[in-house]
Amino acid sequence: MAAIKVTGVSKTLEGLKTLDNISLAVECREFRAILGPSGCGKSTLLNIIAGLLKPDQGRIELGGVDWTGRTGRVSYMQQKDLLLPWKNILDNVCIPLLLRGVSRKEAHGTARTYLPDFGLDGFEAYYPRQLSGGMRQRAALLRTYLFTSDIMLLDEPFATLDAITRGKMQVWLKELCAKYKPTVILVTHDIEEALLLADTIYVLSSRPARVLLQAEPAGVTAAINNQLKQEILAVLEAPSTR
Amino acid sequence: MKRSGSIASKIVPWTALAALLVIWEAAVRLTQVPVYILPGPVQILSTLGASWDLFMSHTGVTLLEAVTGFALAVAVAFMVAFVLNQVYWLNQALMPLLVASQTIPIITLAPLFLIWFGWGMLPKVLVVILVCFFPVVINLLNAFNSVDTDLINLFRSMGAGRLAIFRMVKLPSALPGFFAGLKISASYAIMAAVIGEWLGAQQGLGYYMTIAQKSFRVDRVLAAVMIITALSLLWVKLIEWLETHTMPWAAHERKWELDQL
Image (tube, rainbow over all chains, first blue to last red):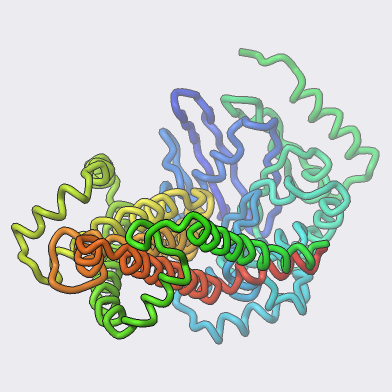
């Protein structure tokens, strides 16, 4: 059974047709990337899967259950770290556990076990403002992971970081996913990032977004990946058929 | 550079104040203005010292009115801001009325309060509430409404209800705006009580000032003004102290920024 199944989703936002009949399925423990030009509706699609927006048409199934327009099943990380400036790192990452009714002490215990893997060991008492952008994104990812570890939506999580930090974070995320094996949908406009991290890449057209191409870079050599990159670029740059 | 700047920033205002008082005193002595027109600071202070007990008994009354009105205004402002933030149509309906209420001159309203509520404490407290309510409610509501929608969406996606979002996100985010409003209201509170007393009272600094003014005791009027100013400044300082102690993370940020220099 697919962890995430999107069937025929269309959405018009403020009179602009943003998503046009999108269908995709993500198997359990798979890492999928959704690649597309800026403003093509990738974030809208994630908002719909997260249940924050209702689609005009189509449905969202999570683990075989209809979750269209309902929140609370998948965890969702956005471009901004959205850490609360008045809470320290440990309390920030514990928020989803507290919202679920876990006691503060127990939440702290759970969170602490993950701090080393998320590169936050020793920084739990710091306030977000005191940490680098990369560390804040790692804290945001841990908060996301602690909410629901099995299905995670990542919306351009490294877009605001500098190129060097971004490269390090991508390698770190790849290792982390190899260890914890979550189901992930990563939205990005960075082809290299998609090729590095994802098992399968969906390439979306510019607005209204349609699935142009489905590619599988996993386990292939650099040369083939390069070829795949050219192919993706060609699809993206081709004049629209409509 | 930064350190000497911070010391200078403490010395400069006090020096300016002292210089102003010296110039005032010198001008009064040189021109020999009669005391019933303009007394110097030394004369005002000696008047204050001579009738200290009388001043303090009137100050106590005024302070009680101001504190009561301020506390009630803040409590009502908080509830109104909470409700208007949660119920959008109510916000739309009441915001223009709130703004309009601020255009009514208090000085014309206070005598009506006397007619409606008599000569006791209530009409003065009402004037304080009217003056102090608006800065708090407008700053607080603005702060509630300007919380990052992405942050609210994140909490929604984690299954947080409206009250949880209010408690965990909106309330702490709104603290700086809340304190900004509190400081404005704190600086007006005593003045508002005095205005209430000025128009009809049997005790309080405003009442005392009307009596002193009628007998051309300008020194007494100005001594009362000094008390009002000093108390208002103390009140604002108290709010600032509360602000740094309820928002330790903000102090953290300031300290961190200093460390970076």
